[in-house]
Length: 179
Image (cartoon, rainbow, N blue to C red; front, side, top):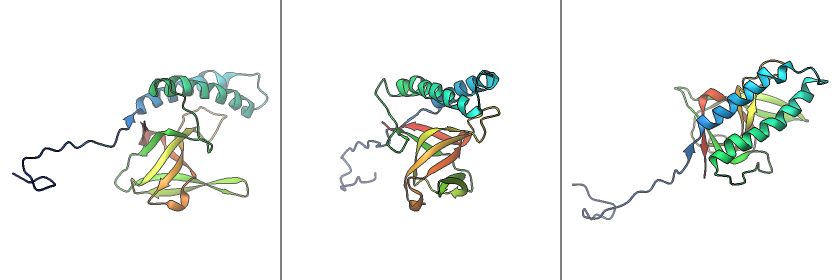
């Protein structure tokens, strides 16, 4: 019989996990599908808008309300969850699902007011990403919510990129409730 931490083989220890995060990927994906359907089936067919950017503004108002109702209220039992001052949900962690060579992502480098997305290889679980929104490159075509736009709030691997926005492939991430 092996000895415990104090050398006493008759002692019993209770090990409690500090990882209290709950997987909410299925709920987030239901919201994603709702947004995709609303955009692709209705908003793309509207004729009253002056530009696709006008239409996107109206859609964003609706999708934000949908997110509050279908994700936040359901996952956080009606608690008032808001975006932080830097525009992310601190209570929703996004974890990449690593393949054999890591995880390819893009990060936003802002230069003189313009965004340039740069490809990066993530190989460590020591990166803490938080959810901002779903993202697609175009608003004139069908919406797929291809990427989860996230904020890097802590990193052992890339500390110089903390507080930068990243795009992570939606199908290769897991969403977790942090409290």
